[in-house]
Length: 160
Image (cartoon, rainbow, N blue to C red; front, side):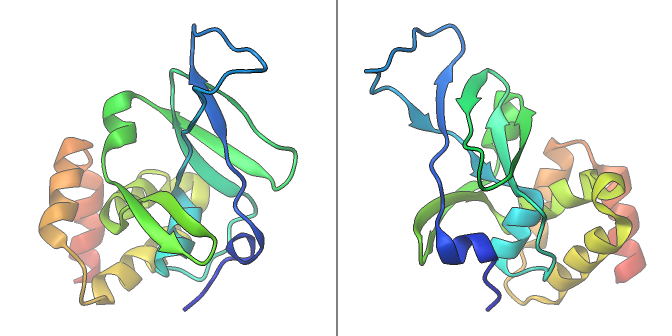
């Protein structure tokens, strides 16, 4: 199974506090808020061999976060409803991490297909459809909740 280079070394915690809360040096209310997202999630699930140039994380838009200088991290912020859809915990060599499930990852890759590249999006969708453990009804449920029926159905019909 393909393992991204940053899982082989270490996963750094991302600390966050809801906006408006008091932050002090002694706060213990900090939470792990980053969810592995897009290309990083693809790599974790083994759907693609593409290794993104940075760790891609999703955060809630009402969180303030401090990120380390290294490794490079790219943040995407979302409303609570979109952020919480499809989060799972996955056990890796580095420990338990939070990542979006395969179906939500595919929806997000199709959503950002123009920014990431059409070839990456199509390869991810192809690999997902080849896998026997795919869950098409769940994928279509996410598509409906995320209001992406038109864009993803076009690609599903083209590949089937």
